[in-house]
View 1 (cartoon, rainbow, N blue to C red):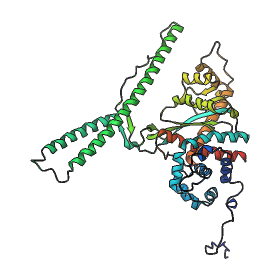
View 2 (cartoon, rainbow, N blue to C red):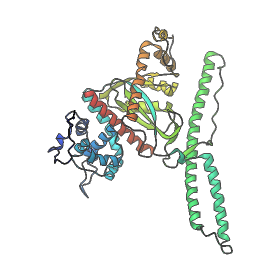
View 3 (cartoon, helix red, strand yellow):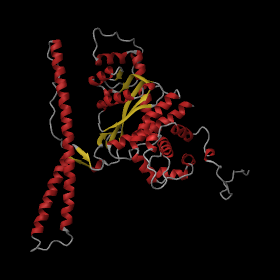
View 4 (cartoon, rainbow, N blue to C red):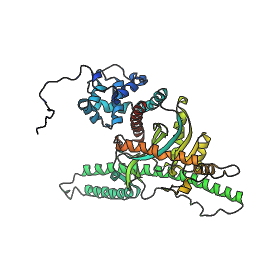
Length: 453
């Protein structure tokens, strides 16, 4: 029996709708992005234009283009430019204009800080829509590859060996130069060029060593302060109990760079970091605080710290800086990587109940453990560590902490696997911070579009 297929006729003339308003359905994400951008205060972008030279594209259109690109997994300026030809949604956003990749890249680079500042404005719009009110925030971090290769990093040990080798080669070249009047130089050897090349490499190595030494000194000072704090706590415990504390005393830190301390020659502010799947990568540590009720990102920042312990303080500062109209954070959920007495004290000082796991939790605990009654509250004034430990052993505490994985880790999974953001395109901590804000803005716009239904 013959099947009557719909014919793919590519010869019959056809026209697009008369206006771009007819390009996409009413309930399309591109329309929602335009609605949000129309509510933003972009005066700081518009006022930056002087009116001289060729007519520029309106900042509102370029902002919408970037926001929709980061929400749908199109991050590169070249791909964004191409999408204005290939995608009906991007054609709608740009009203059938086609900014080239250089225009898009320059706009993003020039206004990166201003674009990042729109993060808070979008949250305020969400609050006016009745879609966000702060309460419990789940904090976590994820390692994202820097725009640099780990093979282009220079370690302290290798830098010293390479410096010694190059200095020896310079001495040999100078010796050949002195003998050039009597002994002809090998034909392929261009003496001035060879000397210049080694001088440049020695300058790069010297700068790299200086950076490694500065980092080592900063690390030593931080470790020395922590060492002094542990000694003081140990002494205070001995005075309180009248007994010598058990366990090994803390080990004093050693100054100076280690043999494996290194710096990237491509992006000096990135670091070699362990990845979740094993191994190491040249990366940054991207942090996000997610509202557990809406899954909206309400706090975001990027750090070059491999360990998360130092990220509670900046997260609390950013949460405190949010407009009061968004509500007050009353609880903070975080995994064991954030646990320390100092961090628990910071949370309590900010009026926030910390739910920070003290040790790695096992999967599938026994039924009796899950149904156990709340333990009695210890008598006397509790330290922040004791209060946090008791809080996490109560039924309400367990239920609250259980939301951590299903909120912030879900957000990271979608950003990486659905939106496809695995690597920063920009270089340098400040630029990477701005790019991560755009990624989080893209996620929030998608999430708001889903929440408004």
